[in-house]
Image 1 (cartoon, rainbow, N blue to C red):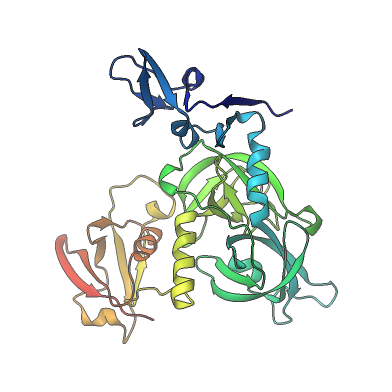
Image 2 (cartoon, rainbow, N blue to C red; image 1 turned 60 degrees about the horizontal axis):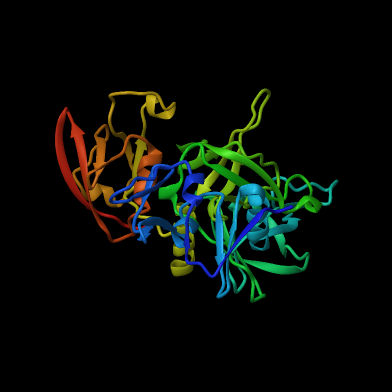
Length: 379
């Protein structure tokens, strides 16, 4: 049974503050929830202090507040995982299709069906998923949470980000709510939803915690690491926080003998970046110079090091970089003041720029610093 507390015709709540892990101080009263100060949360009336209901709704994980003209309903975390799944579930879709005959994995001896997961982000049928889910699909079919199926078409795809957008001709869908990466931290609980192993297991949910941030996972961009179990078919599904907000798209699982709980998701900021470019340009519009970088062994393995920067290994013939005072063996230390010690650092920084934008490259050459102002081209 779901435990519920109804507080009728009252706008202020007392006592609830004592259920939090924060502090409550007299005098100039401040409210802290899990160490985070909530401004204008406490009001005084007839010598007593009261905590505003609205201050709890957005700041206390495990507590949800809903109001109407005649009642205020507060739900504790007794059934919070179920509530999250029920909230996000209608925004999660199964994706199934046949492999193209040109695909490396195509076989004459199987049905060549492959499947994955997607997240509705616009009510008019736009869905984000992994590029590796749909890039080799000859026919893409989307199955909604109500089991209705629709043919989909590929709108945009980028292999480096491992993200794609597909579209179905269906309106009135429930879009997912995207979260904010600035509030994501190691140790927070998360839920992964997807289609593991078999299509009849679609919208399966698993729970875990965020194990690490800014992981490479052998990709070109940063990932969120979690131990929420994912398997083949979970790709493209959401990683969700305890507010029911999507904070990542599940993409990679490390497998091997003795390997457990190493799952990686594309951060929601990268997802937003990709969707924005897909909708504006139909592709990821990357800045380009024609420089080939190499990183140190310590950067590759994530070891602490005093070595700074990326080494210019090569400059492509005829590229934009040839116009500038950049030489092989120079070390790129920073871009517009932002340090870059790995290729992933550089790729992440490039998400801020478009072809035609300017940037200041700080270089080291023969132990001397120099600054080269560049204008990015487009490959």
